[in-house]
Length: 404
Image (cartoon, rainbow, N blue to C red; front, top):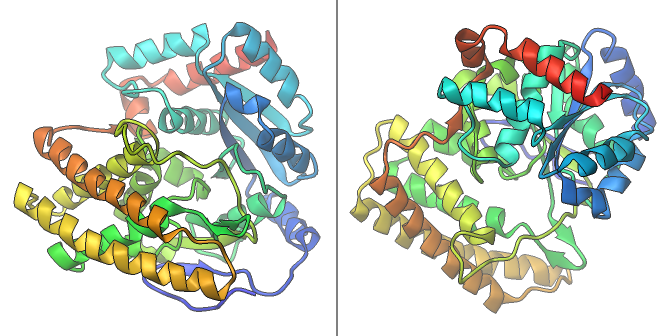
């Protein structure tokens, strides 16, 4: 059983007791009559060959409160798209696949590029953004959830608990962030959250002061989770980052537009396991090294919008405070692992911290060298203003791809 402590600015919806999934889904079916729900699955074609996605589809076949499932498919040619249509055909819900590399979608992206609105790079951020565009264009859903396609421990409880806070008629939440404990195979996982994100947030508060934004970010138990749900209104107004700062950037956007009473975090899984990124100590453009650099840049950019002036000296101070915090956290997690009988390689953890130290420096150098960088994809409201018929054309393109 989880604790019931409420920490920080954001309401935490814990996992207390053993409520059955049948009871939860029965309520969601009732809520869905007035607030139809959509699920977005951003996927690479390679994930169709993995072990997680077939398990996810098998679980979703029993989820009858979803009105629609939208799959964003990246890195697929024509034959692979045809295979994807067959692969996802087992879903009993209405479902649509966005063939992001297909000629229709590419033509739409060229129209966006002509207006300076195209996503800067392909990736999960662009995939999620296009799926949200189709969600808005179809007009079928009042709430939408997003989760990754590499979750090995997936079950029906995950989407149910994720959507519940934003569709319950007596709740005030417009955005829900999923969280979970990253413990599997007798080990602690979640290195970027444990050893990078939290120590860095604490270091930033020590250097620039306890800004509401930093306190808000520090309230999330797993700010880097890829699982979140939102109302259609949120989907229209937030900007989506196009790099590894996706999760951090979305939280920042929600904080900018909504009060803390409209935001919550919810425990969505008793066990959670997905693929693990390599640390990439020798390649700062890959793995956890790249991820942590993008996350640090996202935090620096957000602090600049609050008037925080970052200099090379400030970055060095942040690095020094981060390192002290991170080493303290390594010790804390060592003690936690010991009392729970978990394997814990303290040497490997400290070497990972060394990589994250370099990421903080690299992110600072990149931010200071290019302070005008705009990593966000425009909001769908802006796209509507620039190209009034774009969402209609996006809807038609997806429908045509799925009908051919």
